Length: 323
Ligand code: SF4
Image (cartoon, rainbow, N blue to C red):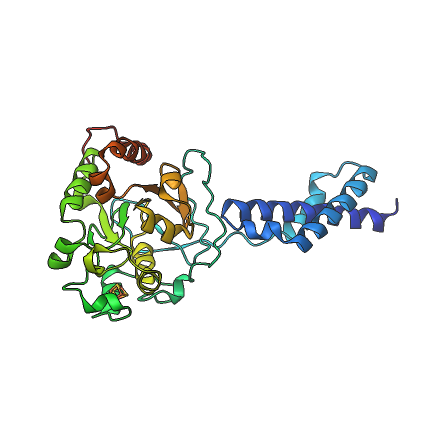
């Protein structure tokens, strides 16, 4: 083999190595759509075959010869920009966009850990309400942007917008469906019977209600506590996404099917989704039953408790412990 052929073969092997590394990173960050592009896959297979046959003809490459690989290596996944940190903690990163490569601790391996490729991709962070490109929003900014919202017909029957409440630096966020009668009257989420149960659940997990943040998919009460309609969810959901971007929690607990299905863009029934770790924008998400459902189906409380215990484990908490 002449020098030119040897050099080409080495370059091809290096490129293949980089492509593999990049695809692995894509898969880890949920970008599996890239792997199913038939043309790309065919090209990769062809490159792989060519590289294999070249490699078989090559003498063992010396370490110094891998320099071209470094030169052609893909850029590192973009790093999130640091944002205002709590004093006692290292700065928490702000995910720049929906494909944020923020790297939380891995959840326990389980089916469905990777988010399914959404049929309708989430909006880029910069296009979310109250979000300025490249900046981590605050909850106040988002609330101001929401204003006296009339973006959907739920505005007509509401007494109060129920934006959300709790610790703006919470590591644990609970997302429910929408306000009920009591919540609408008080402008605070989860204050009725379901709210009492949620508070008990939070305390049983070893947190105080003030430690966590609680919000809903829709901020205005659906009349008669009916389910929110798709266009109402579509109008209000961007504000929820902005809130989560502002909060940057360690864990989200999605209470009930509307929260889980909306955040995950996944129509799997909550009975099948619950109890399995998922990822939302780089944040670990645990789907479980809504407290209102648990009030009607007490036998399911045990399953919900099992789900919450998984969350507790992640925070290093034991049943009965306090924050
Ligand atoms: S539910 Fe959301 S989008 Fe609809 S009016 Fe209320 S705040 Fe606005």
